Amino acid sequence: MKQYLPLRIGKTSIHLHKKTVVYTTLAILLTIVAAIVSLGIGEMYIRPLDVVKALLGFGAEQDALIVQQFRMPRIIIAILVGAALAAAGAIMQGIVRNPLAAPDILGISSGASVAAVAFLLLFENVSIKWLPPTSFLGAMATTILLYALAWKKGVTPLRLVLIGVGIKIAAGAVVTLLIMFSPFLLQNKALLWLTGSIYGVDWNDVLMILPWVVILIVAAALLARRVNIQQLGDDIATSLGSFLQLDRFLLLIICAALTGTAVSVGGDISFVALLAPHIAKQLIGPSFGGALPLSAFIGSLILLIADLIGRVAFSPLDIPVGVFTSAVGAPFFIYLLYKNRNR
Image (tube, one colour):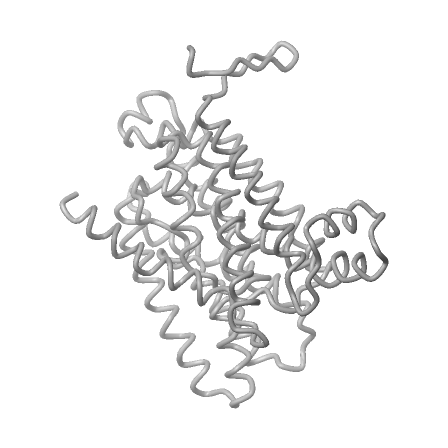
């Protein structure tokens, strides 16, 4: 029990793994530092101490305006989108029991992309505020289709993977066709969204996705024990009294909702959902209860750093954040494939 920290809340006693607490605390601190640094860097540089003063409300008026109104929404969106994608990836890897699984690899993000690109190209006169719910519905519809096609006296991880990859390929073909038969200006708009970018977000976007991200991650945490049981195998999970298919369906819906929420604002950002959970499990082990919050903060940190590089490295150009996550994620995915080639 020396590896655990006892925590008592009322009559409930919880034991927290020390390694999980240490790494999660470190991830939170690194995320805060990255956010403060990112808030200070731009066309006008603001020192970290002045950024903190501006956040607390007693800094210079000009600093407060730049930090709170212009830069803060983008930083918070990066944190929320990164956390949502990472949490969705942790859930998917827990269900499928495979470190190669992620919503963007198994077609859920692609379903959201089809819905979003179709909206951008076919409903150009409709208000852009309808784009987030459209992509959200696309992710949910794709997940239901994935579950239905994978069902055969229940749903197994292998069928989810095979059907998911097929859906991803089909969705990619649909997106390509939509873009090919669209006007040039709309094509550029759609391609930017597909790359993944948090450019131009504001406080309305923050308020729109904040409650969803928090509620869905909490819901996933409440189901942590069921995910851990599923990782023992379907037969063992069933023998332990788990409602396997119901739990798997609920977890898939939460995964889809997190993915749809992230994609609705950030576009089709790749590989965060793959990278963050894998890093978390390498640090603390496979327990979903500990890996979920750590994955979320690692995902936030990855997206914050990628966005900072995109804003600064090629100034005055603002490179979409998805370019850098793909640049890191693609070779990492190849490494995982090589590492798991004999499994």
